Image 1 (cartoon, helix red, strand yellow):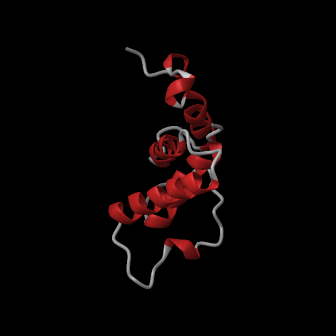
Image 2 (cartoon, rainbow, N blue to C red):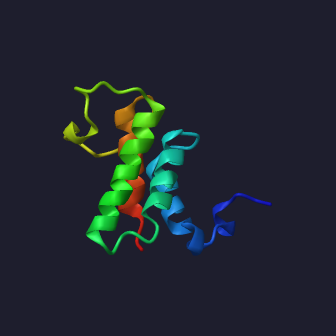
Length: 107
């Protein structure tokens, strides 16, 4: 079975996955977390409360992957923009990549 974009259906987040692939360079680990954001946001984009739930799922994912201090909060990140060479090397970058997936989800 091929894992190319032509074989991913829209019902499985294919267009959102394609947008994540466009956002990052090839073999960037942040692409995986962007796709996780697509999965978290699937079906939650119309309701603001459900969208907030998806954002909290991203916070939980990034804080579980990288140990964070009590003083260190993911809410305090001012710049949520991403770039193609931003690797998932700390909790900030994982959170930004996951939020990028949420922003790319359309439904």
